[in-house]
Image 1 (cartoon, one colour):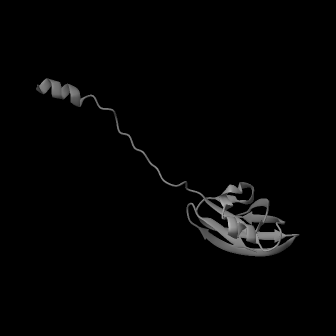
Image 2 (cartoon, one colour):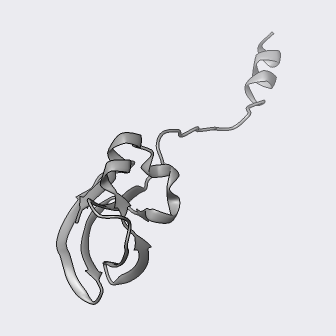
Image 3 (cartoon, helix red, strand yellow):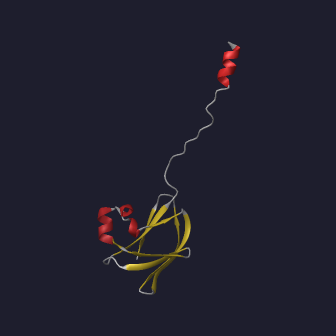
Amino acid sequence: MASAMLALAGCTTGVHSVASGNADECFVCFVSTEKPYDIAVTIDGTLFNLKTIEQQRFSARRDVRARSNELIVLAPGRHKVSVTRDGKEVYTKEIFVSATETKVIEL
């Protein structure tokens, strides 16, 4: 009996771990009361060219993540954001975004 227990004790499957949860990313989008227009967004020195989201449509639908071409995906944390329209700076600020958060910036 003792030898059987020792034989079974030697048959291990190893250590396994499973991690789950939300992705370690966050999103930033820009809304305006005007019709969508082109903006240049600089975040931490990286330039993004995109369009604003019309605020009325945004508020009614709340489907910002489905608009991937109007979102910027970032790592959670502090980021320096600057937005220009037609060469004029319209927004500059340091923001903090948590994991899985969608930060909506009104222009």
